[in-house]
Amino acid sequence: MTKKIVIAAVVGGIVYTIWGGLAWMVLGIHDWSTGRLVDENAVVAVLNENVNREGVYVFPAMPEETGSMSESEMTAQAEQWMEKYRKGPIGMIAYRPQGSDPMMTSMYISGLIISILAAFIVAWLLSRSTAVSQSFFARVSFCGMIGIFASVVTHVAFWNWMLMPFDYTVAMVLDLVLGWTLTGAVIAAFVKPGAPKAE
Image (cartoon, rainbow, N blue to C red; front, side, top):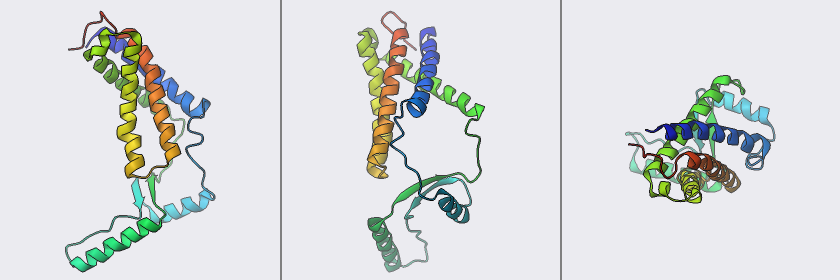
C-alpha cells in the first residue's frame, strides 16, 4: 500500500461524497426517478398495521411451503402466486418502523468513510492494472469502467430481476458512472506512471 494510493483514496472519497450531494440535491438527476404517493398518510397507516419489524418485503410474497402440504396443495399455491404476479401490482418495500434524523451527522461521516474505502479499492485496482502506465485518459477510463461494472451488477440486474423502473435505473446508473468517472480523474492524478504499485 503506497502513500499515493492512500492520498488518492482520501481525496477521491471526498470528491465522490461531494458528487453524491450534487447529484441528489443540486443537479436533480434523481428528481424524475422517484415519485410521491397519492395519500402517504394512508399508506403509512396500513404499513404500521401490517409490518412490525424492519426489513425488505416483496409482494406478492412467495408461497410458504410446509412439510404437511400435499403436492397438489403446493401446486395450487404456486399457481395462485403466479396469477397474482401476472395481475399485479408487484412491489418491494424497504421498511423501518422507527424514525431517524435525516441530517444525522454520523450518517454523513459513515458515508464519507464508505466513499474513501470505495476510492481506495478503485485506486488499488488501477495501480495493479496495465492502465496505470498509460495516459491520463486511459486511467480515468479504467475508473469509469468500474462505475459501469458496478451499475451493471447492481441496478441493471435489479431492473431485470426485481423489475425496478427503467427511469430509476437510468438515474442510478448515471449517478454511478458519472461519479466514478469524475472521481477517477482525481485518482488518476495520483496513481500514474512512476508511482509504485501496491503490493
